[in-house]
Length: 224
Image (cartoon, rainbow, N blue to C red):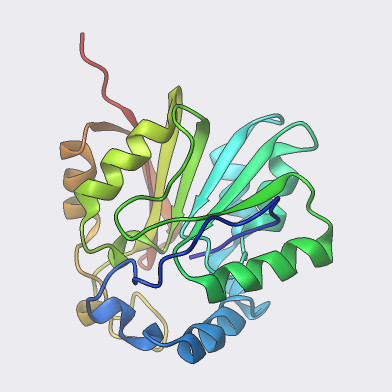
């Protein structure tokens, strides 16, 4: 979950990205506002190491990047700096409360290369063949219909673009203060299989937080 600055917002659905157990704690606007504040806590940096993640992804200046399910805009400062003044970042989310938090973050930091997009539960409403990289950070386990979302993300990637899934392992102790066995629907290998069945090929994977959080990087599988 994350997000950013905007020239304007599309009309926003109130549907959750998923209705499963992983989203039970933010079904109301007030719950989402509280969660947005928690997601912006600076203590998160020590646990998730966002600067190290962005460096590992080797985002080139001038790139076009999507923060899919951007939540409170947590990743926007890092992505904005990575793409530089000639690059662009789209922060997408389905919840107005998260987009509001991101807009404030973007305005406060003056991130002029970031804009907001309000997606739908089944379609992030991103421009076609646009993105050099789509980042899904702690979002995949929230999706009700991953294949519909994967199809939409596939349409949004530039021909050589990358889809990056960062999520928690489905194992005891993977998420501090939370039961990953009930919160996470699928472990890494199942997620990798689902993404590949959606028309992608795995090109790299590694741990972001050993034993807790992994990174899986994909490209679109083109027909020969």
